[in-house]
Image (cartoon, rainbow, N blue to C red; front, side, top):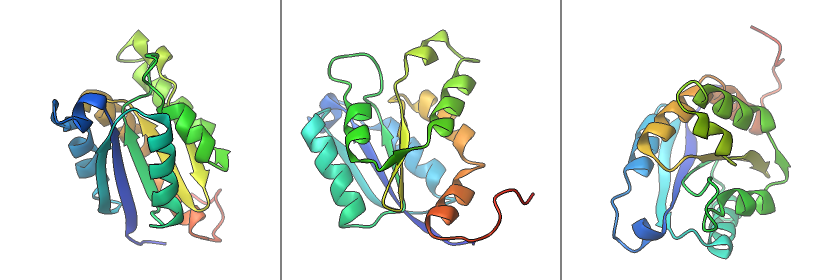
Length: 165
């Protein structure tokens, strides 16, 4: 299945939401995702659990996006609530994708061990948490790019054999 997917980029940043910081990570992520489809939704919101939950739920349930890429809020700060909010809305996790990002990031920094990013599915939408820095976005999203078309096709109902090479 070769189709364009509807993609949302959601940046979680208190300073970005207040207009105190430019959203470089979201722009980088949107540009990198263009090969998969159209970024039809882009938003910067505060690191607020209820707001993240409601935005993700709306983007899946009402807008029927195929892929939601979040950037920011995956660390250890008390305001980093992206993983908890994502976990609250997904039907099931896809731990291998998050593990692959962390494993690849360890080649660049031991701080990769502190990432709490998760990947999961709500209905037929894949939700991916990515770091909040442009460099972290590039390094982590690059790891996922080879498998995203297959993952998205499967969520859309592609019946082909996964083991085919």
